[in-house]
Image (cartoon, helix red, strand yellow):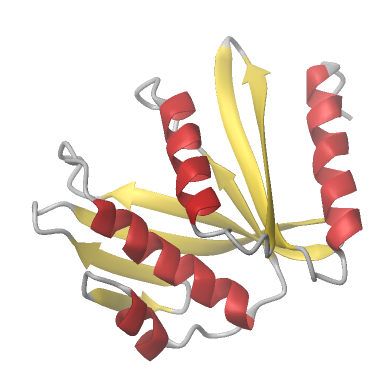
Length: 166
């Protein structure tokens, strides 16, 4: 992963973001919620470098509605795409049964920042042992592997829906 420009993230973020290492960031809200954002290399999708995206509420405290969280997260993601021709994979946490709400929230956040249609955002649901797992990818439309990424993601979803993992 190409190193993100920390100054650009800070300039676009309403919260102070601390860079722990390349791909790991912390920020704390005015409600004392501490978030860790992580972009971790994963298996390629469509022969394209892929990073799994994590948002962790470190203290596991109830997070109030706070639009600055969205702005901070998006500052990090948009900087990621500015310097990387990669795919972001998002898998919603299932620990509390609120994964569908997380998926809808993340979709809404990203759509708000996708006004110029620079990105394609695909989401799906994979049922595993009676648990719905919400997953998604984000890829820039100008990515050289764009069609391969879209096809691979859709084929993977179809494979799981057919309940025939290879």
